[in-house]
Structures are given as C-alpha cells and as structure tokens.
Length: 127
Image (cartoon, rainbow, N blue to C red; front, side, top):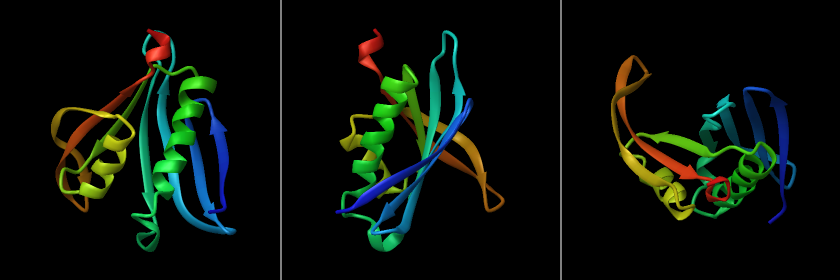
C-alpha cells in the first residue's frame, strides 16, 4: 500500500487527504482544537466506499492520532458517530476509543436531527 497524507494546518483544525497511488481516497479532519486546560479536539473522517474494509482508514487515523497527541500535545480526541454506522464504530473501537454514551439529536443531517454515539480517546501520556 502506498499511502500519503497531505496536511493543511491552522490553529483550530487540521485537514488531511488520504492518497493511494496518487488518488485521493479519503479525508480526515481534526476540528475545534481547544488549548489551555481542555486540550481537546473533534475527529471526522470519510473514505471512498470501494476503499472501505481494507485497513486504510485505521492506518491513516493512527498517524493522525500520533500527530494530535505527540505534536499538538492534545489530551482528548472526540468522535461522534451515527449509531447505525457500524463500519465507523468498528474503526474507532479498534483504535481503543471508548463509547461515553449517546448524544440525542446531536447533529442536523439532511434536515433531520440525528443521534450520535460519543467516542473518546485519551492521551494517557499526559496523565
């Protein structure tokens, strides 16, 4: 697998493209980075359907987690996932994210408020 991550940084977020053999196959975003005592961010990601289930997202997220924890020195990464998105839940659970509960009507998608499961990964090196 040839994989490249391109980064566009700013103080409140990171946007990354996932490339395979020069083709953009997915995207990862770290947003709402909060510094000070909170040291947290939100994680979002998407991957082209034909590239799902091949380990690409897990590998890319491992690299992004390393950036968030070791370069940005963040303490907490949060991912909110629609409960029926089993593939996405499997990805974060394999990366040791913990389900902290359900956020009712968390995000409006296509005009409808959607519940989301709230997953968190903590940087134990900062404890």
